[in-house]
View (cartoon, rainbow, N blue to C red):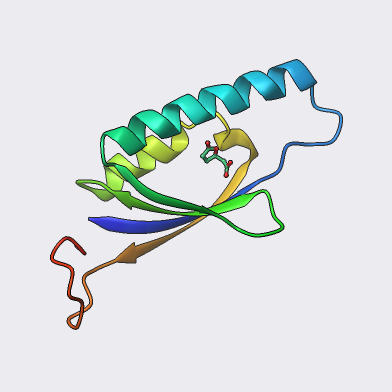
Length: 96
Ligand SMILES: O=C(O)C[C@H]1C=CC(=O)O1
């Protein structure tokens, strides 16, 4: 199952810089593990914002929920999730 997830990150001004750096490093490692596994299929930076648009490939809504809630930066994120399915005109068989 494919989902588009839009993530906006908002770390408050004045948040401990060392803890912020630790959380960002943990987030990057978690992201790269999920990317290698094929679960976090795509990510793009939204120009001019601390935000991304991502595509996840998961087995269930519950799996996506658990992944998103376990992200190190989750407490500082606002997310919008959109379920996707293959467009009938697509040439790509893996769009599902
Ligand atoms: O930078 C972000 O958009 C937040 C998050 C998503 C992947 C990652 O490494 O950090």
